[in-house]
Structures are given as C-alpha cells and as structure tokens.
Image (cartoon, rainbow, N blue to C red; front, side, top):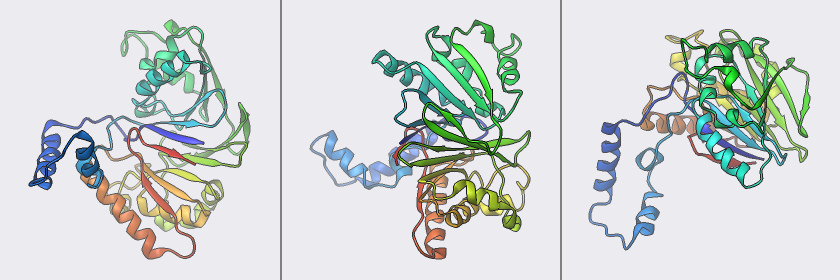
Length: 319
C-alpha cells in the first residue's frame, strides 16, 4: 500500500508568499557561504541535510490523500483543492493503461474538503466511473449546490463521468474493489467520518481528519483506540497545539498532536502522520510542531516506538 498526499492543509488553501520564499533563500545562501558546488547535484545533496522548512514547503492545498492498494481502481480520501493535481496525475496514468475507476471517500462536506471537485478533470471523462462514498446522505446535494450558477459556471449535470453515491453505515465494513473499508463517526460540525482501509496483504491505513478528541475525555475515546488498532499508518487531524485545543479553539472540531500520539500509542499503531495543518502556520511552525511531537513521543514512550511523520503535499509513504 502506498499513501500519497496531494493536499494537507485545513480550512482553506494557502500559498507560499514571496517574503517567506525570500527568507528561505536568504537562509540557504547564508548557510552555504564559503562553499562551492560542482553542479546542481552537489547543491541538492547539501540542501538535503538542511531542515525541511529551509529547503522545501509543506504546501498549501486542502485535504486530498490517495491510496494505492494494488486494486485496479483509484482510492482517494477527500476532495479538497489537492484533488485537482491528483486528477491531472490520474489522467496521465489512465493514458498509460490505468483503469478509469475512482473510489472517493468523503470525511465530511465542509467546503475545504469538496472544493476540488469542480476542477477534477476525470469528472469530465465520459469513460470514467466515479463512486463517492460518504457517511452523509446529503453528499450529492452538497456537491450539486457548489456548482449552482450563483457559485460556479459549470453545472454538476454537465459532468460526463458516470457518478454515483454510496452512503456508508458507520461500523459496517464493505468491500471496495478487494479492499475492506469501514467508516467511523467523528465529533465535528455536521459530523465527519474516518475511514480504515485494509488490503488483502493485511496492511491497514486509517484516515481520520476533522475529529475533535479532548484530553479531559479520553475515557470516551476507546472506540477510536479500536478503530486505530495496530494500523500501519494513521493520518490524523493535528491542526492545533494542545494549548489551543483546550482554550481558544475548544469545540472547533479539531485535535492536537499530543492527543494524536496518545491515541495511536494506546491503539498500537505503527506510524502517525500529522495532517490538516493550520493555514496560518508557516513551514517553520509546522517543523517546530513535528519536533515537539517527536520529543513528546520519546518522553512518554513505554514499549515500542511510534513513528512520527509530518504530511506535506507530494509526500509518499509506503506501508
């Protein structure tokens, strides 16, 4: 199973602005002062040793995660603005022979998680089949509404792909092209749903975003411990710091990196991917959160280590 991240921000897309890019370049130039590089390869080798925020960016597209499962169909979680880039990649792969079948799983219907669909090129392919799975019975209504004339110039009915909707029942596993998928209800405005994917080899990935887990109510999280149980990777909402989740942004429907570590450790998960990054956070802020999360995991570790990674647009993780 290969997990590919096309969009990792929360709430709204953000761009790397000129002043932040200039700051990265300035730090790189100062850090490389006195060095000479024979070619671009040597320069890239030096950059590879620098902190991620100094040499790259976590990106700015909203939630969209692809799973390559070995099945002939595509598997995609959420349709944020990252869906556009996924769609272009998928069309190229289809031209090379990949099946034009898309299984999409929606966490919920807030705009940052569906805004990429009007720009999803495969939706205009008459040979494509798109199956949209959701825990919400009103998923089709939400997608049609955002393409009404007052909001968008291309109506939903102008799309040419064969599109159908499947409403999943939480806790009831279904087979989707040979992959077992189970949904779980989560605490968020208008509800959200996490998904656990298990392939025939026994590999499993949990996608759980826009879910609020509270530190003072961890006894109520036993269901999530089971849901995350022994997963090879948990992609988890870690939008806020712990301080924010218990003060200014309590009941906003998101969780912290600290709670995510505690849940994954109790569940015996192997790796945690920090996800749904706060749009006001610069790359350096996210780097700092990653370092703090790794340190917290080390300080509280009992038994096997929990791997910590931080999702960014373009990241690929093989399970």
